[in-house]
Length: 321
Ligand code: SF4
Image 1 (cartoon, rainbow, N blue to C red):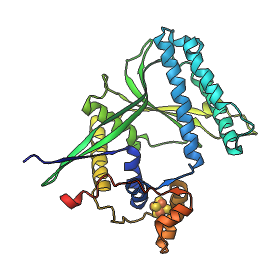
Image 2 (image 1 turned 90 degrees about the horizontal axis):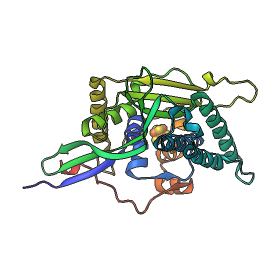
Image 3 (image 1 turned 30 degrees about the vertical axis):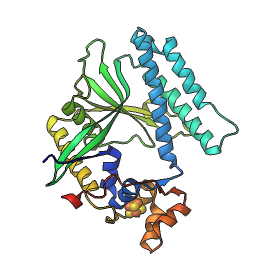
């Protein structure tokens, strides 16, 4: 008899939330509780991603029109995107103060970025904002098959070009940050997992060599001059095939664990008196629930959307294992 196949789709951010705090994952991904207000750091990250996407779409458009790499910023095809960025970041005196400050910060970051990296003449732009979904793993139980898919988001894919280039292909991860300190890039599993997916599912026509982490400082010093070298930094990291396999194995196990219990199973919290406030949208609800308050009512009163439309994507996988 052919077994029925169930499918769920996960994301790296879901896997990462599960690893950080299972209770947070249970609220955000299994019950789909959603804060109505976005945290400022997340808003800044989303804004910077958007600006970067427009910037590289512009460079790619100029490249398609045959502009020389060094002249791409001057090409009319790029200028169209540059005008859009300018319009979107323009100050609006009627907007909320927080919005005005965010736009001011993004304007400063973008002007510095263009000054620091110019037309990125040593990169051929291959893909901007590539979105794909592919199977991460398939699990067979006595009576069913479960396919776990992964969303793969590649914001920028480039190939080295020009004299002395080795033609290697890199995923570029543009990040805004409040500190350009040292990072242990070997533990940035998101890019590694996407590389593994691309290699194992033939998602792109080209093999990826590694990831370039492109950091932009999002902290403006109103008094002191900040040289460009202290505001922008790029660091490459090429993981070995063995590393990529291990990253994928860990992700598969986490994705399975995160979705293999019934919805009414309440997982343990991972409380941390320093990190919870910074990393979680459910701090007050988490505490209130622990004190015995009704969770759904509390979330509704504290500006969270409590979906009545939600049907769990699978009511626990262990029930049919
Ligand atoms: S407040 Fe802390 S313990 Fe509670 S859900 Fe958030 S991360 Fe987990």
